Image (cartoon, rainbow, N blue to C red; front, top):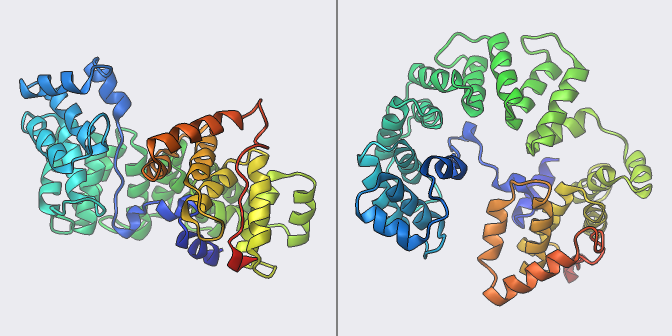
Length: 384
């Protein structure tokens, strides 16, 4: 299945292509809009009102203004203005602003590359007890980003965040125990931290725990438990977990064909992958697209997302941003983690095109057409 991931990434087709892997030295941003809205009590006020209040020194408004500039909401996106207002709030000790600065300065895809400053602001937020910042500071010490690499410090900060039940830190702490970095290698403790993180909704931790059961790594080998944890990882959109579940629970090509023809959308999605990858069958993009579309029409959310990315990338099917938007929105009705994809697609649409796409989206939803009037993919000529 590795070839599948590579080929699909060429056209930005699968969500796995944009998954950020902390093991490779990149951390993820902690989105906290709901928390901020609850704390501020004025989430519905206008940009102008926020701006006026921020200029008067209100720390929450300063932070909110930074958010608006960073995300480009109600105002043109401007990272430098976002930095300015985050700094104003951070200097007043506002923990969310400190954490956001840490992210902006460390984000490899951003306009800044200030790793020392990033570690500084994460440290200030972490000292205030903010678990995501404690996790990020642990990351900085683990990889030596902005600070001298120190596994013992990484263990310290991951532990503090883990004790607050923060799932990413629990998973990261499990990795350190599994690898023996900063602590004595202990597979049982690693498995316990993976389990806690997985129970808190972390898909990648569920995948790691499944791997330990599959391989009998420090715990009794148990194929059934491995399958259960890989399934949980897959259900939480962890791509490696999906691959591991399929690999351990794999049927033959003929069995998938029989199930797919009988209308099983999961089997149809698997056929899509097999044809893309050339797994037990010759690579055939036409068949791959056909089965992916069938699965999407039957409501298979991962197939719907894949179809959105196909339309967006234009690698195998004809590029169509409106169709990409429609399928991404359809997928988002079942999986709320489509925000970044939808945002990327919207940037390619004019205001008029977006309005038209929204109308088309509404008309192809259940109960109006049960997806049958949704956009159909057209294979590029070179793959016909």
